[in-house]
Length: 223
Image 1 (cartoon, one colour):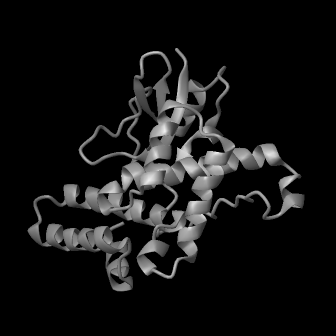
Image 2 (cartoon, rainbow, N blue to C red; image 1 turned 45 degrees about the horizontal axis):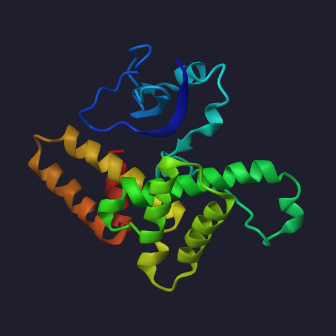
């Protein structure tokens, strides 16, 4: 069977954390998801199994959209640098093909976070929603991708703090916190005090797309 890469993502609380191929528990609570191109069946895999599933296809492990890059505990993943048209022609000319792939992954990650994973936090935007729906039907054009990245770049420069929080780097962190809080609420479902504490942080996160330094400090002892 032939599979295509989807995302590297967090496993939802209450879901089986085992690798679909080996049955081994994925104790990091993250997995690589691949989809059968013929029937749409999705597998939850370890990195090693994902690599094996993509053997003899045109895909590789580098083609996964990584939604797990916002960890506030470990050293932050360096941002994906993309040179937009006109920003630095000499650099663009060095390896335009590689840069196009990086730009595509960054755009798709931004769409996935704003229009799917965090849309209940008020992150959706009509133009981006249209691009997100388009990406599910067909390949985005280079012009589409550049437009998405320009939107992401613009929010970073916005004077409104909430708009600044719509940057890709911040949304990565928000998604990480959301997923970890959901798991903590699930794990401590019999402890009302902790549920109230984690829920209060989740409310803050959903409203402002950030948490306070004090909340982050308290939360780190559980992560």
